[in-house]
Length: 157
Length: 173
Image (tube, rainbow over all chains, first blue to last red; front, top):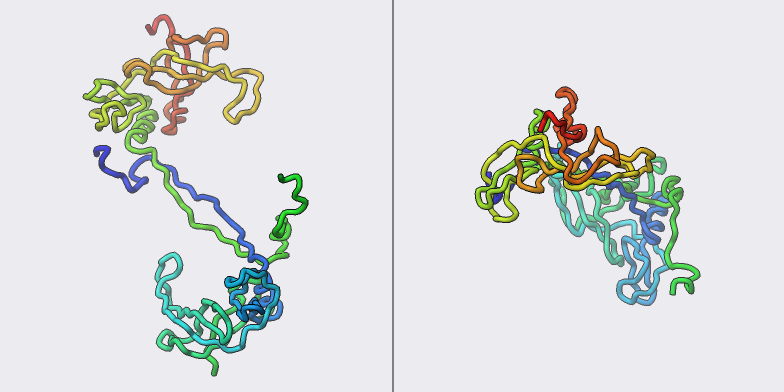
């Protein structure tokens, strides 16, 4: 081996393996806190509203992206939304194959700016944009104040 | 400037707010595994230490014997050429009488540390190590020393497979 060759596998030589402890706790922020507490305690979705721009943001923001005003008004998200885009995942976040494919969707709501990405609770063959859906919230005892308090979105029967 | 600020903007959170779940949060542990390699030259250097030998690399360009070994010559900018061994005797280049231990704790009896240039390697090529078998009043630059090796079963392929360097005895010259 010359010094122009590159060693890409450290294990070929004497080596030490380790694991970087880079744990972190990411807080929700002021607007996120309102959103997750309402989801956890009341099982409902909130959007932050800017009255002067007549815009409601989902997920809620602390400031209006259009006029930069601080947002203090929160409005409930309409009960029924629509699948804006859907995809079928065959691998997990680490790239490992999934035992069964998962359907994920971006769901928007009438009169609301933004939307939520979450599981779409349908068979992979039935993942279609335009499907009317509603959130399926986990039982109160199972909710912890994260986005996983939503099980996903299910078609409106 | 800052003394005129009575209150900083923002929301202060304490550790207990997070631990007791007073605010919502997400925890994440990245899968940040790594393998740190000693590289080709140092891997062999450490393996040879375990066998009680000190290995070096020769450079045909500048005709130096590089110790500790490296795979390229920093003067010639070319790969080094061959493995060779140097002796475990040498000369103290520089030393320090340290009243701090390796964890920077204060100690009453000083430890002696310094750089030894080894016989058989090019001038001023050597390694940093501990000195023993001498007092802080006896140690001096230019002193001839010899490695004190740990017993083979205690060696780990580490630079500490040598315990320390002691004064070279008259009969060993």
